[in-house]
Length: 362
Image (cartoon, rainbow, N blue to C red; front, side, top):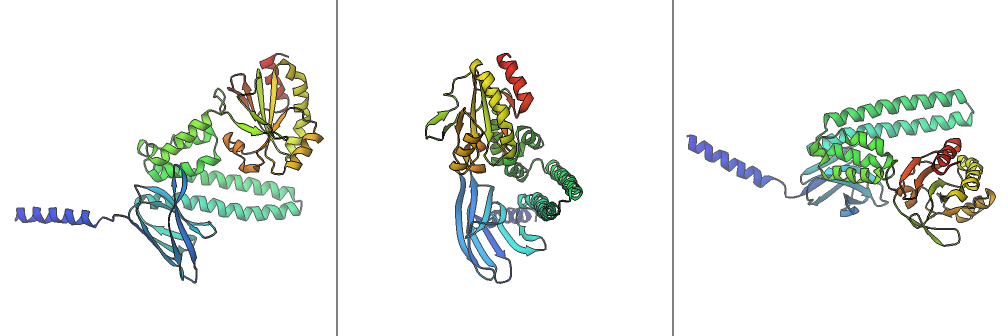
């Protein structure tokens, strides 16, 4: 009898292994009369890559295929708008309409990811609601309501952040937790990203997503005081090319600004005085504009009498230079020594002049 039971158990194990899916199957049933072409794309080290496409008819669709391990995937419309995010692996996933959006059922990592996404979705929904309220209060010039709404949103965002951090602690070893940190890293500075990454356990840190975060941390570390700023080449108004490392100076100021930035334009007269006083002592300034229109950029340079080097790729907020230096707001400054090491960040006005005087002598 024992031998028969052992054989049955062995056969059961073989059958179970044989029934494991060789690939994935994504079954969607969103209801209604929804239709159109859908695309399945995956996030790789090289960026987004297409994995498949299908037609949705009456809210129903299906994708099949195979992936090499857990990966982040998106289902996009023909207009490339995302409708679902999956922690894709070789198993069956089902998608259906729910009270707050599309509900996704799949593996353990998907269920963990759903919890992170629920908090993020809730923040976005609340932000959209409050933006409408803020616009109404601004139109009515109701300063008290504007301040109250700002305070309310800050409190709400703080509570949401705590929920996300609680989830990170609960699922610190899960690759889905590392994926959440990876998707948020584009909005974080070195300190903020380090804190989130520090909450992850070793299995999550060692995952593909953890590796992406480590790479981003290394890039951001270069922008911290003591780090060596990355080199770049960019065009001036007349089409000449300027490089950071090719600019020789005892002290270099990278000044990120834009013609449409009121605070930048207000700061320019003071920067002009600093340049006049310290250029002869070894200060060089490279203004990096986030403008998109060359004429507006040129006019601002003329109007503000900016005589130092000015460059731009006219990419606006999508500028590769802004991305390279993690610029999230302007004005933004980086002060570098002659070896391109960062000695100070985001100094303006008297604080900027004081640091320059300290480095070059008054």
